[in-house]
Each structure stands twice: as C-alpha cells, then as structure tokens.
Image (cartoon, rainbow, N blue to C red):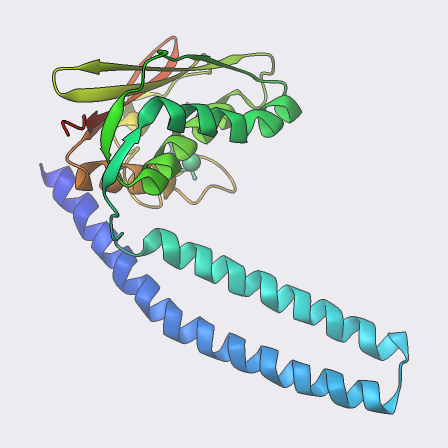
Length: 231
Ligand code: ADP
Ligand code: MG
C-alpha cells in the first residue's frame, strides 16, 4: 500500500511537472518558430544562396520535431479524459498486432495471436486502452530484441464479468527486484527508456476499474483485466 501511495504521488508530480513544461517550453518554442519564419522570408528576399536557406530550413524542422515531442509527452503525462463506449477488445488486439507487424519483422520476432472468433465487448476508452496494449506489446518486443526469432502471443477471453487480455513473451523474464518497481514512473532498465510505459498502463487500466498483473515464469506474461460491457 505504501508503494501504491508512492506511485500515486509520483504520477501526480508528473502531471504537475508536465503542466509546467507546457508553459515553459511551448511558448518560447512557438516564439522561436515565428521569428525563424520571419528571418526566412527576409533571407529569401535578399538571396537564394543555399548556404543561408538550408540551415534555416533545418532549424525549422528540428523545432517542429521538438514541438511534436513536447505535445506527445504532454498527451501521455496529462491525466486522461476517458471517452467511454462499448467496443470489441479482440478487434482492438488484432489492430495492435497488425500495427506492430512491421517492427516485429524488422527485429525478427514472430507475433502470434490466439483470439476468439466471437467479439469480447468491453466498456472503455478504445484509444487509451489500445495504447495500453501497444505499450505492453512493445515491452515484450524490446525484451526479445536481441534474441531474435522469438514469439509474442496475445490471447483474450471473458471471465466473471471481466475480459482478460494476455500478452506473453518468451524473453528473459523480469527479476523480482525489477518486478517490484515495474509500475513506478521513470523506472527503466533500458538505456533509452522513459520508464513511463507501465506507469501509464497501470493508471489507465485502474481508471477503467480494471487491473494489470505481471507474472514471470518462462518469459513474461502481462494480463490486462477490463470490465466487460453488459449493455
Ligand atoms: P521502459 O520500457 O521505457 O523501460 P516501462 O514502464 O514500459 O518503461 O517498463 C519498465 C521496465 O520493466 C523496463 O525497463 C523493463 O526492465 C521491465 N519490463 C517491462 N516489460 C518487460 C518484459 N516483457 N520483459 C522484460 N522486462 C520487462
Ligand atoms: Mg516500455
């Protein structure tokens, strides 16, 4: 419970920090882009020398990349407004697998799914929950990245008013001391990891009245439990 409180506290801090970031980074970034556009026009009036125009174009692209990055980060860190409706969770899983196939092929990973033919209706925000499954599948693929030829399996079924979505990988698994901290914001064992993936999954699934469980035996198994739609 104390760990839960620590996680909640950190998540709240992320929210506050990101709201601060919105003002601290967005405004000067927009101002810089505007000034650069002015500069670009003036330069073009004076000369079409590539030595002058090319670097301006490059800075413009970099600024726009930065701006996208900030927007993406904010979208993630902001407490989510859920748009609840009834949707088919198996169709969503299929979509996720389809979206990840190119990356999986690039890494030499085989994606398998054993999904029921009948729809499994869930009540929730489809896009947010799709992001949850994507985060989990990407973690599985990242765990397999350097091993090649391994398998990520996704399954789904209904049980006692809940729908269970399962993503398995046969990667190295997760040592107990890491498993303890897997939902902590900014906790990552990857050199380029943000450590936000599982934290966001946890908070989104909880906001839906669901649960997320991680188990390791051979590889890793992540179960996402979501309330089934009754309507
Ligand atoms: P990130 O992916 O940016 O590191 P996450 O919150 O998604 O952050 O995951 C936190 C950590 O949990 C990862 O750094 C990794 O150590 C561990 N982890 C998550 N999923 C798996 C998995 N399927 N296999 C092995 N380790 C995992
Ligand atoms: Mg991740």
